[in-house]
Amino acid sequence: MDQKKIVCHDINNNLSEVGPEQLTWRPSIYGILIEGNKVLLSKQWDGYDFPGGGVNIDETLAEGLKREFFEETGLEIELISPVYCRTSFFHPTRSTKSQGQYWNAVMIYYLVKKVGGQISKDNCDAEEQKYLDLPEWIDVTQLKGLKFYNALSIPENFDLVHKALTL
Picture 1: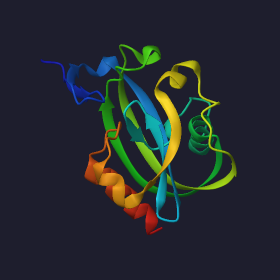
Picture 2 (picture 1 turned 30 degrees about the horizontal axis):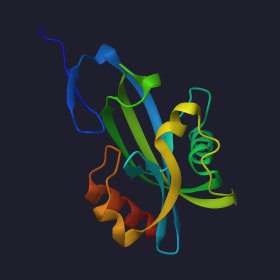
Picture 3 (picture 1 turned 120 degrees about the vertical axis):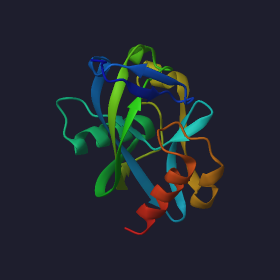
């Protein structure tokens, strides 16, 4: 009997087939912070993503998002409401600490509100300092023209923000 193969993608949409035993379970959580008609996005390489990332085994979802959001933006947040959840089979190729890994990434998106802090990237680890720049406030009407480094399509990123605006 042939073993099941899982197709994983990387940030450039290159595909790899792996067996289930090669996958690591990786819940991840991202925050959507909207002020006025602008959303705060994490600037990564030559594109963007929502601030957030992997939840550590000893964290709740809220703790993981608060930590990740603070590391990438310098802002303290409060979780308001879940917006979206999906699965992504992902192969991180740009991160040296994740080299050779394949993830079954459950991606959870939350609407958040700012409760403190100032925009900064000073709390990122050494590897993140290499590819992260200061987060940017982007007008929601400009999202369709941006390059995103996440598993969502450009229309899905746009729809995600517009759904958050209705909450």
